[in-house]
Length: 265
Image (cartoon, rainbow, N blue to C red; front, side):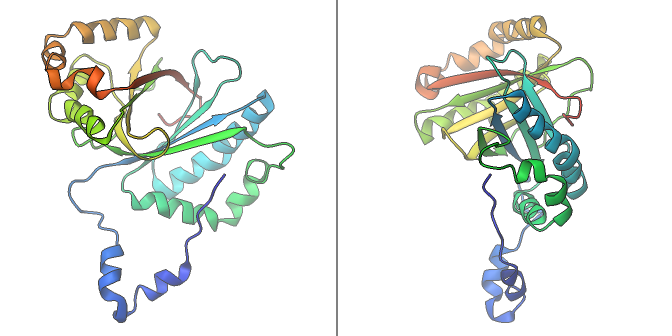
């Protein structure tokens, strides 16, 4: 796992009057408009049950409690509903402002208790790694849904969908459909219980947008998507030539997930 180190001296020198302009530019503006959350998505690939257990033990016993303490945020932890072989593990970490992303990494980097409790995962040897691969992306919430919504803790499954675009312009145009043309409102009106909508700002396969919606079970999922496709408002939006999927979307990925018993989402 890659970790960033932050230079303590920069915090001290930032207080010096001689660099006031630079310090002012770097200072986090927690009240700046418009307020939008950020979401980090980590996806772990394993080759064995033992690897998955090591990673899940770390997140359940060390990482999730630490994030609750540092950020006061729920961490979503999910496995695949119908994995092809060993399941992947999906971790969703919300940040109410971007600066908390850097702040959490700094706090963990310097937390001796965290490194001691998480040693089996954090210091796993090269000949017995805790996972085979970790893919990470950071997303910024859409303007029309700037804060996550946690669904009720009842029987539920989640669909994580990603729309990849061939160009930056196409990606922005697709996001415009959600933000400005009412697509998010359709999801809410039809009871999809969306958790978040995010544009990937760091990560693989950019440009892309990713979102998560909630269902009771697979039958409920099928019923909701049929209602969406048949919805008159969706038909009106999708019929506009400039919003044709053939122009804006190069690939759609759908992954069905189930929350672990320690997931905060």
